[in-house]
Image (cartoon, rainbow over all chains, first blue to last red):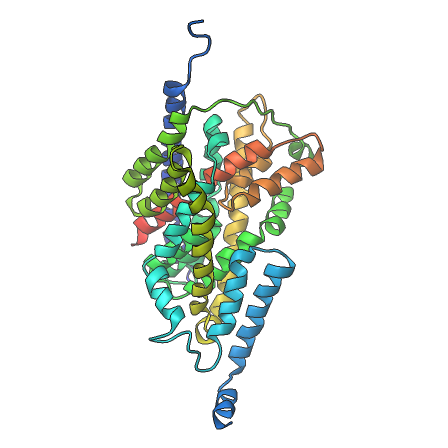
Amino acid sequence: MNFSNFVHHLTYMGQGMLTIFIVIGIIICVVYLLNKLTSEKKGGDQ
Amino acid sequence: MEAILQNLSAISWQQVVMWIIGGILIFLAIKKDMEPTLLLPMGFGAILVNLPFSGAIGVDGALTTLYNAGIANELFPLILFIGIGAMIDFGPLLANPKLMIFGAAAQFGIFFTLCFASMFFQTNDAASIAIIGAADGPTSIVVAQKLQSNYIGAIMVAAYSYMALVPIIQPPVIKLLTTKKERKIRMEYAPKEVSKLTKILFPIVITLIAGITAPASVALVGFLMFGNLIRECGVLNSLSETAQKVLANLVTIFLGITIATQMQAENFLRAETLLILALGLLAFIFDTAGGVLFAKFINLFLKKKMNPMIGAAGISAFPMSGRVIHKMGLKEDPQNFLLMHTIAVNVSGQIASVIAGGLILNFFL
């Protein structure tokens, strides 16, 4: 059992979680944008 | 007669143990209905490859040929992803995209287990073990295979077994981290219409984003999203049906029985296998905890609170996790319908876990 490996890999944990949150954040923004751009306008010409 | 005696005398106790393990997998598949599509072929395959002088494995063995043709090059899990992508309706997620954040939070167990497993295993093995927490069999196979893990058999068995154990593993963890009052929080569902164009553009955009941010995940994400594009485009209905049913079933049959090539007694019956099973469980528990605790954290800033249980659906075991948490909500309050929220979080977990797999590959490949 090597505890120093645990500490060493904490960097990857930080980087990994941060990247996932950033990527998912980008995807959320893009989906909001897509919804906004492609939503059909209600109550058009009668 | 002499040949029969020779074969009988070649049976080792380790092989008998593997027959028992194979029998247990078949029992769980048939009697307990736990991931039968995979546990049954794996169980039968475990018996098949642990017969003395088994002709199914070896240089000319059919299973070895299948392994080299479909798993060693990650082809089967990727093709399976086309079927999975065709099965998933991202509609509830697209209607409420902010829920996607829980898919990210619920990947915590993967990265925590990576740190923990690195104390016992080399980095490539630790990373492959950690990805069991993705609750996503194909991703586990691809990552373990690409990182050339020495424990691919145990990792695959753990990945698929824990997917089947979601109803047993998640509820106690969720109950431990939430109060009864929190579990009773109702969440309204206001159905929003999502345009067809959004549904078509979504898989393309996700592939682009994932490909740019985590290039190693592009095959995983790409095949998943390709399947979804076939589903949503509206002009390939028969292909979509084929991908969802025939293709997925065919690949699953081959995948399950081929995985068994990694369950030969000499590779599987090691102390490390038990440790891998324990670490896989740890990854699952911390994924669940990560999702729930993140939801509780978000609630600190919200006027209208969310039910923190939905955070736990951010693992990729789709749709089982979503359903399990919906049922937990109903148990606390029969009028509390969380299904649409949990399913939305659950499909985001599918995307996030694939991205997590890609990140792991980016780090260590």
